[in-house]
Amino acid sequence: MDGYIGIIAIIIVVLLLGVGTTALLVRPRSKTTLPPPAPTPQAPAPPVEEEEAGAVDTLAPPAPAAPAEELVKAPEVEVPPPSAGRMIRLRARLARSQTTLGRGLLELLSRDRLDDDVWDEIEETLITADVGVAPTRAMVEDLKTKVKVLGSRTPSEVRALLRAELLTQIDPGLDRTLHTSAPGARPAVLLVVGVNGTGKTTTTGKLARSLIGDGKTVVLGAADTFRAAAADQLQTWGDRVGAPVVRGPEAGDPASVAFDAVSRGIADKADVVIVDTAGRLHTKTGLMDELGKVKRVIEKKAQVDEVLLVLDATTGQNGMRQAQVFGEVVNITGIALTKLDGTAKGGIVISVQRELGVPVKLVGLGEGPDDLAPFDPEVFVDALLGDA
Image 1: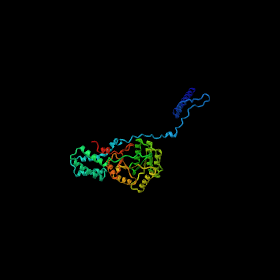
Image 2: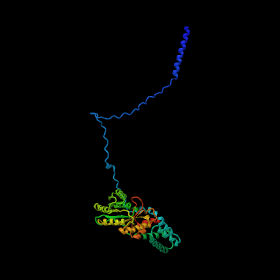
Image 3: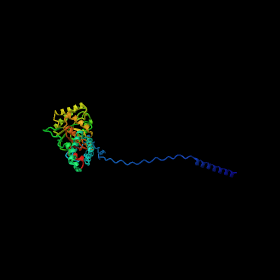
Image 4: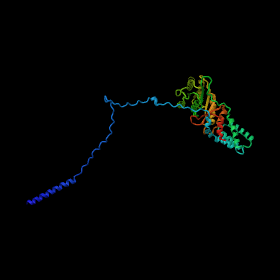
């Protein structure tokens, strides 16, 4: 009996051990919590030096800020080149006009037989190049006569013939001197006039630059008070070459600005005062009258030595009408012909001089600051005809 009981006890113990083991096997696994990441070691701050006596920081104070006036630098004053020889240097740009007025005529005149049809083509070529109707007829008649006298014509003879005729029409004998020297101690006064879009303000700035390159001192008058941009543009030109600019309030009295500019020129003992006026439509009677007033007010202080009319070479015969009306108001003494580079309308030099009896004195041959040159008839004609 005791042995039977012992066997049962052993069986019970084995069963209990099996149940415990099964419980351990089916027990759900708990989520493992990862330890927090170790903190990233930081570089130790550099030690701060201290004074021996009292642990006072010896760090240098920050550098003081630069004064405001030092941050805005004045524009560098440029030294322009002299005006002498500019047109020769810019001859290649003039040559762009040669296709119609120069090479076209050379080709026509070099034909074996010059009948009426060819002469009609020659006449059309001249008119297309803005030579004008009256000058064209005069040129054609002269060429017909000279061709008959010459007889057979070699290319060099035709070129010489046409060169002589163009020079005759342009008239190299006209006085093209720019009046930039005045008698006595007063400055010479130049008045620049013209309609909007011809490059009038730019021409004024380039002229000032050219005169300074020739060693003269210049004061500029921004009498175009209707366009703030015009005064700002002139100011930029003046700053670049060190020429003071006299300005007035926007929409102020142009005559007052012109008067103040001449007064400043006298006070500074400048050589030349150039007054840029507002671009005006020649059809606006009131504006043209105001231009006359500007000239009269200036003459209370000093004589106006030169009145330059700025014309756009690409406007053709419309520029002729402008020239005539301006001439009636302010007595034009010279013409500055702009945008002459890259245009086949070079004949306007002939027509404008013939109609007004006023010489072309300056020509604009590009957009660069030194692309304004004194007009030289021989260089102009040679560029139109190309190299022999």
